[in-house]
Length: 194
Image (cartoon, rainbow, N blue to C red):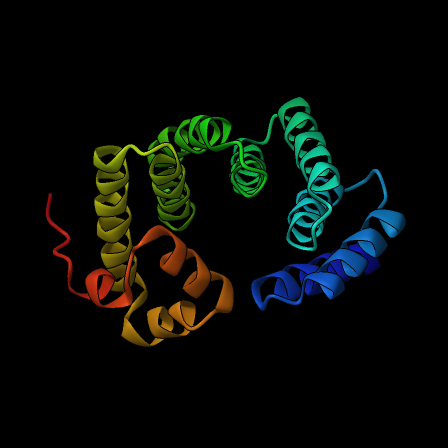
């Protein structure tokens, strides 16, 4: 139970941009987790990986995310694996490996589309757009941005305006939108039809 509480606190700190606290709480979650709940240490590893990367420990951050991906694959939890892959793609991009980030993000994106996880899928699209831009593939970046905007519009419709507005107010979501070029105005006005 303590490990889960620390993990939740770590993930909240990460979403608020408090990377040092996220790193500390992820480490505490890992230190107190039991083998009973396999998903908690996996989530703690990729949270620790993201926090470490954003604090400048990039090799360490990628190592934690790769461990999370490997562990999630062994467990066989597809949703957990996709979240770990999404974290790995973000870390790869931060580490200057745009090609690896694009490959990881698009693999996750394709599977997320099949599972209907729109919130994670739009983030995969946004990460793929950033990676495409880093690779000077403007057409690829535009395609990914358009898909991300469509998914955000669908989220707004299904969640409602109030919940969606609170989601967009999160620091991590604002940062991702700014870095990917997906704007709030575009996301809130895009048609949900294909």
